[in-house]
Amino acid sequence: MSAGTPLVEVRDLCKHFPVGAGATVHAVENVSLQVGRGETLAVVGESGCGKSTLAHTMIRLHEPTSGQVVLDGVDISGLGNRALREHRAKMQIIFQDPFASLDPRRPVGRAVAEPLLIHKIAKGPDADEQVADLFTRVGLEPDMMRQFPHQFSGGQRQRVCIARALATRPELVIADEAVSALDVSIQAQVINLMMELQSELGLSYLFISHDLAVVERMSHRVAVMYLGQIVEIGPRSAIFENPQHSYTQRLLDAVPIADPRARRDRPLLTDEIPSPVWAAGTSPERVELREVAPGHLVAAEG
Amino acid sequence: MEPLLSVRDLTVTFGSFTAVDGVSFDLHEGQTLAVVGESGSGKSVTALSIMRLVELGTRGKIENGEILFRQPGGEVIDLVQQREDDMRKIRGNAISMIFQEPLTSLNPVYPVGDQVAEAVMLHQGLEKAEAAERVLEMFRLVRIPEPEKRMVQYPHEMSGGMRQRVMIAMALSCDPKVLIADEPTTALDVTIQAQILGLMRDLREQTGAAVLIITHDMGVVAEVADDVVVMNRAKVVEHGPAVDIFENPAEPYTQALLASVPRLGSMQGRSEPAPFELVEYDS
Image (cartoon, rainbow over all chains, first blue to last red; front, side, top):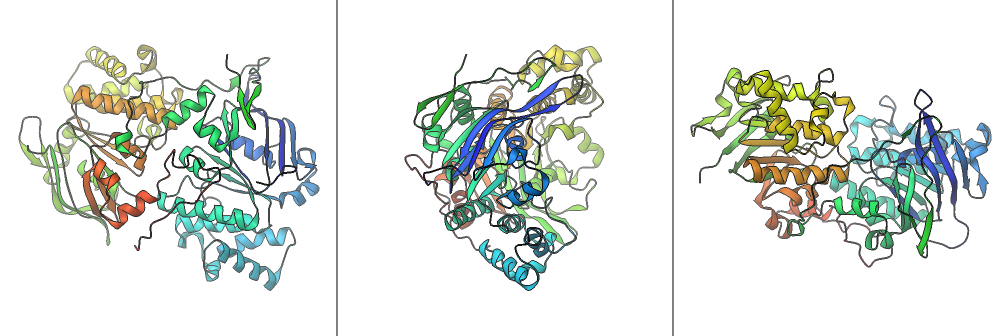
């Protein structure tokens, strides 16, 4: 992780969705974070905590309700379509299910070539050559570009999606549960590939995941989300070895340990996460983060 | 001791494809046995074969083998030879099953309490009022808070964790000898998974039912299983006590599988991320 200005700075980002009768889902609430160059920031939390909505709002797949996203010194939260398109080349996303993100009726090489054509990076034989290079880079044979998605395994399809994300030479790649649907042996290979690409290309990753053991492997820093807000953020070792917020501790305690001798007796809890839906005129209390160690911020608990 | 359930040389095909190839294992009273494997290894087809559900609605066929089940009365029957009518009396009664996704296993237009009551009325001949009592008792057993209120709710009004508790309540309502759990926590968040796994462990002690758990997650296996059957490409590659499988995996496939499992705490003291040290496995 290099010093200097961060690649991405998110300030007080909010994303609210109306759900009828004046009620609102506060999916993302006053989130501020930074992603350094060449760094992986993992965002962890349970279903509905807002981690995917945060990622989608950062690259404006959702329009933010309020707040700023500064990428490379430019606030992209207010850009018009044309200007936004230029900046989109710098930020790419990989989704959970590669089968759903590839057109079943087009050869996969076309999917990887498309961003090159749209962003006018290359065309014709030059584009083909770049696609072949991208295939090699992600560990696929260049010949495979003429095949269709159904001819690939799940891991290979995700490699195609990674190749497509890299086509525009992005600085930020968002991985939204990008390895969650893969079998563990394939998952480990794809994670190793992502780490290799990071060191070769200096990529920054925003790694959205519910799997804490995977996050511990591949992240430099970790943000823990709960009900749309960040409750703890800091260097990986601080979050995993010295978690301060009760929710972070609870999440870590719940992770199954792949060692039958380490089996623990846990209290039998039945509690659930409260609803993020707020009635008209009400809103969640804003959590304040305080710094407990350099770069390690924790929400105050009542 | 005689096993409760003994799968012997089971082979299941779908057309020309062999999904399960000569699989054998025993399940004893009070034991939790995990069948673990990756997608397409044949673990779920094995589970569905025990319930004789592979032949229903799919083109699956049990080509060979026996599934010997010791009935509550002591008589041993081969489930493969049972007629559909007889299987209906066994399913949900002496052998019951829970699935990955509770929302697709529950009927969306009936209150959950009625759905659990249906099982005990059908299998145990209880009257409606007795059945309702039994449902309440089961909901308390699986630690559903405010069971009276929850009974009359519809599936969509409940969280995924509560819905899975309802499925477990239904599965245990007729005091099964064998509970088959096919990826029971895969669709759940990790804190809810921990609750459900803890509940399953607790219930085994309370009910004495043997548990056959089907999973792809080695973490889940380590949390609940006494013994493990590792499957790959339709075959059993390794079978033994969980502690031995995790500490001294004998087969190259098991070694490769375990090497790719992310383990919380494995990065302690390291400041930078690190790739997995993978074991080559030539499939």
